[in-house]
Length: 483
Image (cartoon, rainbow, N blue to C red; front, side, top):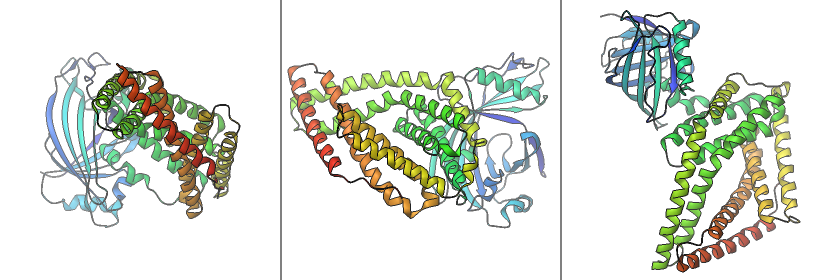
């Protein structure tokens, strides 16, 4: 059997674990949706070591399992479609595909770069006359990045592919899925998702706009990845999602001269809202870590163990409430609009003429961040609420650190020592803020017994002593000047 070339017209969607597959019978000309047919696909992907195929939107793979087992070379075609050349299974790359790939590889060696295992559930979408119009596939994916950049990931996605139907049906089916709460996929392919971090590491940026947009794209990729982790309940995903959103918001505000002001402000405001949505769940995680770490420093006595059980029980109840509230927000319309706005931003950033400057705009942003940090530190001296004032210093130090992270690729060594210094301020005051939050919880909860109250009181006093030491250290510290 020789080569076969087909044109794919398809749409991909991110899909949460546990959700039932939407029903599309009755949408447009679709009369029936068949029960699922299960298959397992094993895909091994090949590329040059510097990912020349992936950067060109081309994929070369060997597939086992399914109806189309064999060697496949996919490349972009007109109107957003993909053209795929298929050859029969075999242990070695067919010469005709190697020759076809040479257009993008330039003759460089092809090596194994990734492996994807897909548990696929396929639903035929048929017309009233029995003709198959399209297929809806529910893919449960496990991916592994090969080579020196080992990376594991797993996710679920839906895919609609046209068969014997007019191209307009694809839009109709996509609209029906989105109306049912399904999210359009952020990554154009499974492989692109697995290689996202590698592909984000492009050439050294040429100007301020390139520098900042490289950073923003990396944060949007992180938001998408950790968003799915939060939905699955992955450890530390709430923290990492909030960090990515704060980094993105900080860059939009700190480097606002590079962007159309109204659009940057609108996106930053929505990121601020999303950060508030994530805060209760993350703050609960931090309080738990802080309090259990402090309890571990007390002698192992029956009273301490009883207080620990009381505390863990109440923290678990609060965590479950916070998680339910968070998931309700993440499945809401406002959050879906935010994800769409992020994709639009990186696809077509609203840059101003200032983005064409070199290092000048980056240095200006760092100096603005440094001035805000110095002003917040000065305000602590006469503050009526020192805890709130120190928290403000911490936030300004974090913003300064994120501004430095953006500028590092273009400013290099000049920014690293300053970043290191402001990070120390942020870390020290971060511990201070965590102890303040834990202390507030201890004051509100006396426990189930007098002994619980006694243990909680000891924890509170230990935290207060540690806060005093941290504040004294901060007051002795000399803040650095911006590069």
